[in-house]
Amino acid sequence: MKTKKEKSFDAVKMMREIRDKISLETQNMTFEDFKKYIESRIKTSGLKPIGR
Image 1 (cartoon, helix red, strand yellow):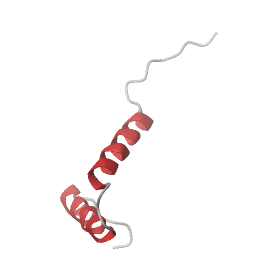
Image 2 (cartoon, rainbow, N blue to C red; image 1 turned 135 degrees about the vertical axis):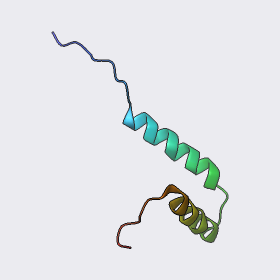
Image 3 (cartoon, rainbow, N blue to C red; image 1 turned 90 degrees about the vertical axis):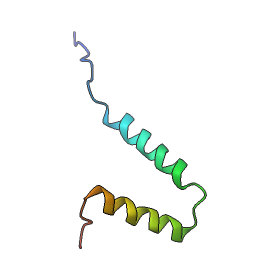
Image 4 (tube, one colour; image 1 turned 180 degrees about the horizontal axis):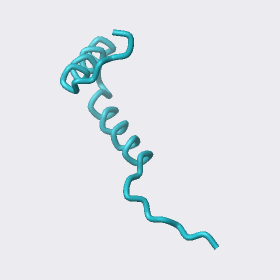
């Protein structure tokens, strides 16, 4: 009989929460506004985009 181990971190739940938050923040943006939103989020995150 297998026992179920309690998760301390649920990656799928976290991804869905982040996706829902971004969707709410960007739902009424134009494509140009959305591009500016993405660019500003990348700059403030400190992440380097692939291929740059």
